[in-house]
Image (cartoon, rainbow, N blue to C red):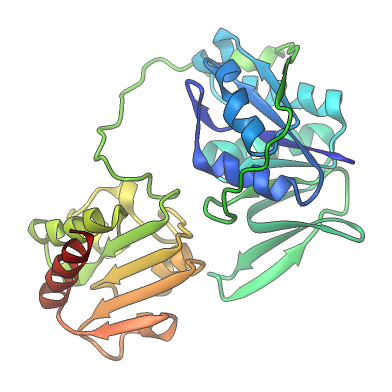
Length: 320
Protein backbone atom coordinates (compact mmCIF):
# COMPACT_ATOMS: atom_id res chain seq x y z
CA UNK A 1 0.00 0.00 0.00
CA UNK A 2 1.22 3.52 -0.77
CA UNK A 3 2.62 5.60 2.06
CA UNK A 4 1.48 9.10 3.03
CA UNK A 5 3.78 11.57 4.77
CA UNK A 6 2.29 13.45 7.73
CA UNK A 7 4.25 16.33 9.24
CA UNK A 8 3.80 16.21 13.01
CA UNK A 9 2.81 19.35 14.89
CA UNK A 10 4.03 18.87 18.46
CA UNK A 11 5.39 20.83 21.42
CA UNK A 12 8.30 19.08 23.14
CA UNK A 13 6.87 15.69 22.25
CA UNK A 14 3.21 16.49 23.01
CA UNK A 15 1.36 15.86 19.74
CA UNK A 16 -1.33 18.40 18.94
CA UNK A 17 -4.81 17.28 17.98
CA UNK A 18 -4.73 18.45 14.31
CA UNK A 19 -1.90 15.98 13.62
CA UNK A 20 -4.04 13.09 14.88
CA UNK A 21 -6.79 14.29 12.54
CA UNK A 22 -4.28 14.17 9.66
CA UNK A 23 -3.51 10.55 10.50
CA UNK A 24 -7.23 9.72 10.19
CA UNK A 25 -7.28 11.30 6.72
CA UNK A 26 -3.96 9.75 5.69
CA UNK A 27 -5.30 6.25 6.36
CA UNK A 28 -7.93 6.83 3.67
CA UNK A 29 -5.16 7.17 1.12
CA UNK A 30 -2.41 4.84 2.33
CA UNK A 31 -0.16 3.95 5.25
CA UNK A 32 0.72 7.04 7.33
CA UNK A 33 4.40 7.77 7.85
CA UNK A 34 4.82 10.53 10.43
CA UNK A 35 7.71 13.01 10.35
CA UNK A 36 8.50 14.45 13.81
CA UNK A 37 11.15 17.16 14.06
CA UNK A 38 12.85 19.01 16.89
CA UNK A 39 13.09 18.55 20.65
CA UNK A 40 10.93 15.73 21.95
CA UNK A 41 10.42 14.15 18.52
CA UNK A 42 11.31 10.68 19.84
CA UNK A 43 8.57 10.96 22.43
CA UNK A 44 5.82 11.29 19.83
CA UNK A 45 6.02 7.71 18.56
CA UNK A 46 3.67 6.18 21.12
CA UNK A 47 0.65 8.38 20.43
CA UNK A 48 1.35 8.47 16.68
CA UNK A 49 1.47 4.68 16.54
CA UNK A 50 -1.80 4.48 18.48
CA UNK A 51 -3.41 6.61 15.77
CA UNK A 52 -2.18 4.77 12.69
CA UNK A 53 1.42 5.77 11.95
CA UNK A 54 3.23 2.70 10.63
CA UNK A 55 6.56 4.51 10.86
CA UNK A 56 7.79 7.62 12.66
CA UNK A 57 10.75 9.40 11.10
CA UNK A 58 12.47 11.60 13.69
CA UNK A 59 15.19 14.21 13.54
CA UNK A 60 16.48 16.67 16.10
CA UNK A 61 18.99 19.46 15.60
CA UNK A 62 19.47 23.00 16.95
CA UNK A 63 18.48 24.37 13.55
CA UNK A 64 14.83 23.41 14.06
CA UNK A 65 14.54 25.71 17.07
CA UNK A 66 17.04 28.43 16.18
CA UNK A 67 15.94 29.19 12.61
CA UNK A 68 12.62 29.67 10.84
CA UNK A 69 10.86 27.19 8.54
CA UNK A 70 13.65 26.23 6.11
CA UNK A 71 15.30 23.56 8.32
CA UNK A 72 11.91 21.83 8.58
CA UNK A 73 11.51 22.05 4.81
CA UNK A 74 14.94 20.45 4.38
CA UNK A 75 13.91 17.62 6.71
CA UNK A 76 10.52 17.09 5.07
CA UNK A 77 12.22 16.99 1.66
CA UNK A 78 14.63 14.35 2.98
CA UNK A 79 11.65 12.31 4.18
CA UNK A 80 9.91 12.82 0.83
CA UNK A 81 12.93 11.48 -1.06
CA UNK A 82 13.32 8.52 1.32
CA UNK A 83 9.65 7.46 1.24
CA UNK A 84 8.37 8.43 -2.26
CA UNK A 85 4.89 9.05 -0.82
CA UNK A 86 1.51 9.15 -2.51
CA UNK A 87 0.74 12.44 -0.75
CA UNK A 88 2.05 14.82 1.90
CA UNK A 89 -0.32 16.16 4.58
CA UNK A 90 0.46 19.21 6.73
CA UNK A 91 -1.64 21.10 9.28
CA UNK A 92 -3.04 24.27 7.72
CA UNK A 93 -1.40 26.78 10.06
CA UNK A 94 0.61 29.80 8.93
CA UNK A 95 3.86 27.87 9.35
CA UNK A 96 2.40 24.68 7.91
CA UNK A 97 1.28 26.41 4.72
CA UNK A 98 4.71 27.99 4.23
CA UNK A 99 6.45 24.65 4.73
CA UNK A 100 4.04 22.95 2.31
CA UNK A 101 4.49 25.63 -0.35
CA UNK A 102 8.28 25.49 -0.17
CA UNK A 103 8.27 21.69 -0.33
CA UNK A 104 5.91 21.65 -3.33
CA UNK A 105 8.17 24.09 -5.16
CA UNK A 106 11.27 22.02 -4.44
CA UNK A 107 9.82 18.69 -5.57
CA UNK A 108 7.88 20.10 -8.52
CA UNK A 109 4.44 19.24 -7.19
CA UNK A 110 1.07 20.93 -6.98
CA UNK A 111 -0.25 22.20 -3.66
CA UNK A 112 -3.77 22.42 -2.20
CA UNK A 113 -4.31 24.55 0.90
CA UNK A 114 -7.03 24.70 3.55
CA UNK A 115 -8.58 21.37 2.63
CA UNK A 116 -11.48 20.13 4.73
CA UNK A 117 -11.37 16.51 3.55
CA UNK A 118 -9.01 14.14 1.73
CA UNK A 119 -9.87 10.92 -0.07
CA UNK A 120 -8.48 8.51 -2.63
CA UNK A 121 -9.79 9.03 -6.16
CA UNK A 122 -9.50 7.07 -9.38
CA UNK A 123 -6.91 9.50 -10.72
CA UNK A 124 -5.15 10.38 -7.47
CA UNK A 125 -5.77 11.99 -4.12
CA UNK A 126 -8.79 14.32 -4.06
CA UNK A 127 -9.11 17.21 -1.60
CA UNK A 128 -12.28 19.06 -0.62
CA UNK A 129 -12.12 22.82 -0.08
CA UNK A 130 -14.52 25.62 0.79
CA UNK A 131 -14.31 28.45 -1.77
CA UNK A 132 -15.58 32.04 -2.09
CA UNK A 133 -16.15 32.59 1.62
CA UNK A 134 -17.47 29.02 1.95
CA UNK A 135 -20.28 29.70 -0.51
CA UNK A 136 -19.12 26.75 -2.63
CA UNK A 137 -17.50 23.38 -1.97
CA UNK A 138 -14.92 22.20 -4.48
CA UNK A 139 -13.12 18.92 -5.04
CA UNK A 140 -9.61 19.22 -6.47
CA UNK A 141 -6.55 17.18 -7.30
CA UNK A 142 -3.12 18.28 -8.40
CA UNK A 143 -2.20 17.69 -12.03
CA UNK A 144 1.54 17.51 -11.47
CA UNK A 145 3.67 15.54 -9.07
CA UNK A 146 2.79 14.25 -5.60
CA UNK A 147 0.00 16.28 -3.94
CA UNK A 148 1.08 18.43 -1.01
CA UNK A 149 -2.06 19.25 0.99
CA UNK A 150 -2.62 21.43 4.04
CA UNK A 151 -5.70 20.51 6.06
CA UNK A 152 -7.71 22.78 8.34
CA UNK A 153 -8.04 21.70 11.98
CA UNK A 154 -11.33 20.01 12.96
CA UNK A 155 -11.75 18.59 9.47
CA UNK A 156 -11.71 14.95 10.59
CA UNK A 157 -12.34 12.96 13.78
CA UNK A 158 -9.48 11.62 15.87
CA UNK A 159 -9.76 7.85 15.46
CA UNK A 160 -7.38 5.44 17.24
CA UNK A 161 -6.02 2.77 14.88
CA UNK A 162 -3.06 0.96 16.46
CA UNK A 163 -0.08 0.51 14.14
CA UNK A 164 3.60 -0.29 14.50
CA UNK A 165 4.83 3.29 14.96
CA UNK A 166 8.38 2.10 14.40
CA UNK A 167 10.88 4.88 15.07
CA UNK A 168 13.51 5.57 12.43
CA UNK A 169 16.14 8.31 12.54
CA UNK A 170 15.87 10.62 9.54
CA UNK A 171 19.15 11.81 8.09
CA UNK A 172 18.94 15.51 7.21
CA UNK A 173 21.45 17.73 5.43
CA UNK A 174 20.67 21.39 5.84
CA UNK A 175 21.07 23.68 2.84
CA UNK A 176 22.75 27.09 2.74
CA UNK A 177 19.44 28.91 3.21
CA UNK A 178 18.52 26.97 6.37
CA UNK A 179 20.23 29.51 8.62
CA UNK A 180 19.10 32.59 6.73
CA UNK A 181 16.48 33.72 9.25
CA UNK A 182 17.34 33.32 12.92
CA UNK A 183 15.02 33.36 15.91
CA UNK A 184 16.39 36.04 18.25
CA UNK A 185 13.87 35.84 21.09
CA UNK A 186 10.65 34.19 22.21
CA UNK A 187 7.85 35.48 24.41
CA UNK A 188 5.53 32.85 25.86
CA UNK A 189 1.87 33.56 25.20
CA UNK A 190 -0.19 33.99 28.33
CA UNK A 191 -2.36 30.95 28.91
CA UNK A 192 -6.09 31.51 29.31
CA UNK A 193 -6.77 27.89 30.11
CA UNK A 194 -9.04 27.74 27.06
CA UNK A 195 -8.49 25.68 23.89
CA UNK A 196 -6.54 27.10 20.96
CA UNK A 197 -9.01 29.01 18.78
CA UNK A 198 -8.31 27.22 15.49
CA UNK A 199 -8.34 23.77 17.14
CA UNK A 200 -11.30 24.13 19.50
CA UNK A 201 -14.34 21.88 19.10
CA UNK A 202 -16.55 24.73 20.35
CA UNK A 203 -16.07 28.47 19.72
CA UNK A 204 -18.09 31.30 21.28
CA UNK A 205 -17.61 34.67 19.55
CA UNK A 206 -18.73 38.19 20.35
CA UNK A 207 -19.22 41.10 17.98
CA UNK A 208 -20.29 44.71 17.81
CA UNK A 209 -23.43 43.90 19.79
CA UNK A 210 -21.34 43.13 22.89
CA UNK A 211 -20.95 46.91 23.10
CA UNK A 212 -17.63 47.18 24.89
CA UNK A 213 -14.64 45.36 26.33
CA UNK A 214 -16.24 45.47 29.77
CA UNK A 215 -19.01 43.18 28.50
CA UNK A 216 -16.81 40.47 26.97
CA UNK A 217 -16.74 38.55 30.30
CA UNK A 218 -20.31 37.50 29.36
CA UNK A 219 -18.89 35.79 26.26
CA UNK A 220 -16.00 34.31 28.24
CA UNK A 221 -18.34 32.92 30.89
CA UNK A 222 -20.43 31.14 28.26
CA UNK A 223 -17.28 29.80 26.61
CA UNK A 224 -15.92 28.53 29.92
CA UNK A 225 -19.18 26.75 30.72
CA UNK A 226 -18.78 24.83 27.44
CA UNK A 227 -15.01 24.36 27.55
CA UNK A 228 -14.82 26.52 24.44
CA UNK A 229 -12.44 28.99 22.85
CA UNK A 230 -13.36 32.68 22.64
CA UNK A 231 -13.47 34.50 19.31
CA UNK A 232 -14.34 38.01 18.20
CA UNK A 233 -15.53 39.74 15.06
CA UNK A 234 -13.39 42.29 13.25
CA UNK A 235 -15.63 45.10 14.54
CA UNK A 236 -14.97 44.07 18.13
CA UNK A 237 -11.24 43.73 17.53
CA UNK A 238 -10.95 47.04 15.67
CA UNK A 239 -12.75 48.74 18.55
CA UNK A 240 -10.10 47.41 20.91
CA UNK A 241 -12.52 45.24 22.87
CA UNK A 242 -10.64 41.97 22.32
CA UNK A 243 -7.16 40.94 21.07
CA UNK A 244 -6.51 40.54 17.36
CA UNK A 245 -5.27 36.99 18.02
CA UNK A 246 -8.89 36.04 18.68
CA UNK A 247 -10.34 37.56 15.50
CA UNK A 248 -12.40 35.17 13.39
CA UNK A 249 -12.84 36.10 9.75
CA UNK A 250 -11.23 36.67 6.40
CA UNK A 251 -8.54 38.91 7.88
CA UNK A 252 -8.33 36.89 11.09
CA UNK A 253 -8.40 33.18 11.77
CA UNK A 254 -10.50 30.52 10.06
CA UNK A 255 -12.24 28.09 12.39
CA UNK A 256 -14.25 24.97 11.72
CA UNK A 257 -15.50 23.74 15.10
CA UNK A 258 -18.29 21.29 15.82
CA UNK A 259 -20.27 24.16 17.39
CA UNK A 260 -19.97 27.90 16.71
CA UNK A 261 -21.98 30.40 18.77
CA UNK A 262 -22.10 33.97 17.42
CA UNK A 263 -23.32 36.59 19.87
CA UNK A 264 -24.04 40.12 18.70
CA UNK A 265 -22.47 39.46 15.28
CA UNK A 266 -24.36 40.68 12.21
CA UNK A 267 -22.77 38.17 9.84
CA UNK A 268 -20.87 40.31 7.35
CA UNK A 269 -19.11 38.34 4.60
CA UNK A 270 -15.73 39.12 6.21
CA UNK A 271 -16.74 37.20 9.34
CA UNK A 272 -18.62 34.44 7.55
CA UNK A 273 -15.52 33.59 5.53
CA UNK A 274 -13.78 32.53 8.74
CA UNK A 275 -16.49 30.38 10.33
CA UNK A 276 -18.96 29.23 7.69
CA UNK A 277 -17.57 25.68 7.58
CA UNK A 278 -18.49 25.13 11.26
CA UNK A 279 -20.57 21.98 11.67
CA UNK A 280 -23.36 23.60 13.75
CA UNK A 281 -23.89 27.37 13.94
CA UNK A 282 -25.97 29.19 16.55
CA UNK A 283 -26.59 32.95 16.44
CA UNK A 284 -27.88 35.29 19.13
CA UNK A 285 -28.89 38.71 17.79
CA UNK A 286 -31.68 41.17 18.53
CA UNK A 287 -31.97 42.08 14.82
CA UNK A 288 -34.18 39.48 13.16
CA UNK A 289 -32.95 40.68 9.75
CA UNK A 290 -29.24 40.19 10.52
CA UNK A 291 -27.43 38.33 7.68
CA UNK A 292 -26.05 35.80 10.18
CA UNK A 293 -29.50 34.17 10.37
CA UNK A 294 -29.21 33.15 6.71
CA UNK A 295 -26.64 30.45 7.49
CA UNK A 296 -27.36 29.34 11.04
CA UNK A 297 -28.71 26.00 12.18
CA UNK A 298 -30.34 27.64 15.21
CA UNK A 299 -31.09 31.31 15.76
CA UNK A 300 -32.18 33.24 18.83
CA UNK A 301 -33.71 36.67 18.21
CA UNK A 302 -33.12 38.48 21.47
CA UNK A 303 -30.88 40.72 23.53
CA UNK A 304 -27.60 38.91 24.17
CA UNK A 305 -27.38 40.57 27.59
CA UNK A 306 -30.48 38.61 28.57
CA UNK A 307 -29.95 35.44 26.53
CA UNK A 308 -26.26 34.71 27.14
CA UNK A 309 -26.37 34.80 30.98
CA UNK A 310 -29.46 32.56 30.99
CA UNK A 311 -27.78 30.13 28.59
CA UNK A 312 -24.62 30.08 30.71
CA UNK A 313 -26.63 29.49 33.88
CA UNK A 314 -28.60 26.66 32.30
CA UNK A 315 -25.44 24.95 31.04
CA UNK A 316 -23.78 25.20 34.46
CA UNK A 317 -26.93 23.87 36.13
CA UNK A 318 -27.04 20.86 33.84
CA UNK A 319 -23.34 20.21 34.36
CA UNK A 320 -23.79 20.42 38.11
